[in-house]
Image 1 (cartoon, rainbow, N blue to C red):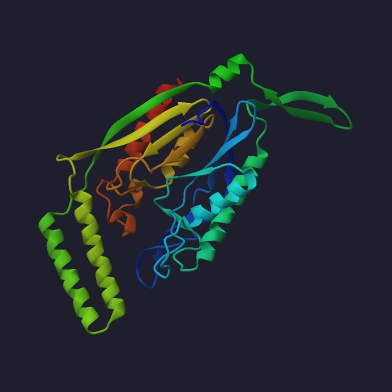
Image 2 (image 1 turned 120 degrees about the horizontal axis):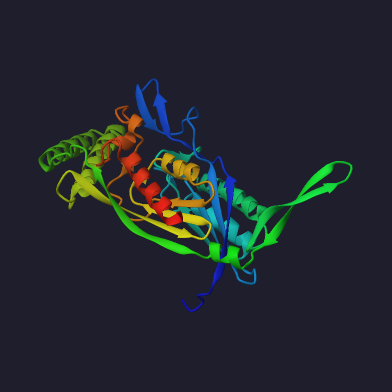
Length: 338
């Protein structure tokens, strides 16, 4: 707080293919698994914010990227920041100022190489994202400037020239506006499981786990333990939910100059941030789901329900809710920028 000051935030967009779609159809298993799917698209957008003093000195870097931090899995026994740790270390090493990471909408996205025990893989994933962020930083012009067309120069060819044009008072006022707030949208529940059913299933799977342990079947014990864990998660998920047919999902939307910052809860699929950026191309859209309650779990596109995807299993919200949330956010953005 003692170091609080006015800053200039400059936005850039880069690309990183470390994240991949994770809804894979396993032919032999005859069902979907939560792992790398090379045949489906993934959002590779990296949003980078360079924060500087009014004189241009570095203050911080913000990196916004959509990818579950699931490089490491059951073979790893360490507490780890996964790929985010190495990403931040590399950016800090290059810039000399703190790096803040904000996770994007990644309900269907995870590392191309993930679920391993080797922390070196997590660090490699982090460095890949860091280099993409640093490349984006290197592409930025001076603070408080726009890259504008400067006109033709007749030479061996008629050359079109561009230049970094500093803000005038009007442009600075436009880039300094701040507005928005915290809002709510009612989203429909699914037919939620009953307490009694969850307790019965939990007891059944715990009993099976104990039996598998007793006969030394480690794989069966692991599988039964996982099923018991899923029931325990459901117990925590529905505890304290508001009564009725809908859940009031909070989201925030703030316009800060040339950018729009959006936050939600839950784990929406990446299409929400892609759609918002498509609708508002004149703004840098920063999106993160790490605000608000997480027990609403995943929000899938309506056409992805009924396929046996893992993400549908823990979700308390009905098909169509992701689209409803997207429209609610877009409506608020439109009101603020109009």
